[in-house]
Image (cartoon, rainbow, N blue to C red; front, top):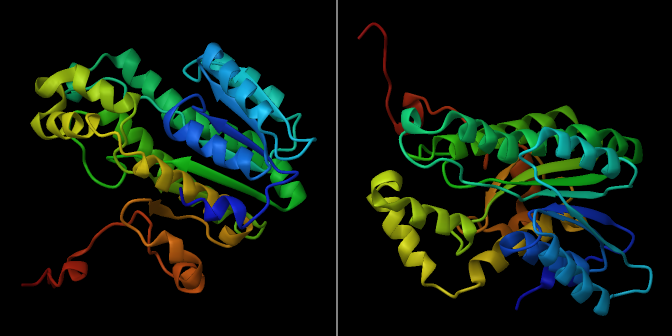
Amino acid sequence: MDIRYTIKDSFYHHTAVITGASRGLGLEISSLLWRAGANVVLVARSQEKLQEICADFLLKRVHPAQTVEIITTDLSSPIAVKNLIDHLTTLKVDIVINNAAVHGPIGPCWENDWKEWQRTLQVNLLAPIEFCRALVPQMIERQKGKIINLSGGGAANPRANFSAYTVAKAGLVRFSETLAEEIKATGICVNCIAPGMMNTELLKEVILAGAQKAGQKEYFNALKNSTSTDHAVIQRAAELCMLLASKEGDGITGKLISAVWDPWRELTQYRDELMNSDIYTLRRIVPEDRGQKWDENS
């Protein structure tokens, strides 16, 4: 396993909050942060799973003062989110990883259950925004902090039959760009990661929905990836997260970076070019971008 970004920079005395931490990518990120010496606050719905992870982490402390805290909550509940925030604001949080997500209703948007559509926005968009709003002020006070929001398929391109999920993820990317611009002078970095298709619970949701609701392409892609035991995609996304959370990632902010397609391992070599351009951002395409010149008088 290549964990060069966990061992290059020490995360001692850093506290990281990770949502959706009980499985998949969230668990991988949490494990890498723990092995790098960070204190971690693990947030998920499964108390039993979180307790197992906590016990395992405590057996593998990197240093005697290292702490792990588990919080069982449902991010679809605004009240639960508020209670969680009330607790998190009592901590000195250095790193926020908004990883928890649900696909929500699958199928044509007019056939979706409206309450489930709204619930998807609550989990994937509103809860992460609330965490940012609550924790940014203390980061500004300390002039440091890293926020990493997990994007997903459909954030940068249309994705038929996944309207709630794609709207939430596109909104999260644009929110991250906007927040990064608002706090660019503070030393706090805000970025999004597109992790790629992973063999996780989200993939199972597509398969359960079937080809008629999800669409043939989505369904068969999910089936293909569900038979894979390759952990490399999850590992790669977690390592990108570690890079952005580390000192090495300082100065990189307001970007949507693909763990699969972008040369992120060499990204710091291009820091100046990256931050003086709109590379890795969501932007409107005009005719000139595609070699066309449309004259209103022609």
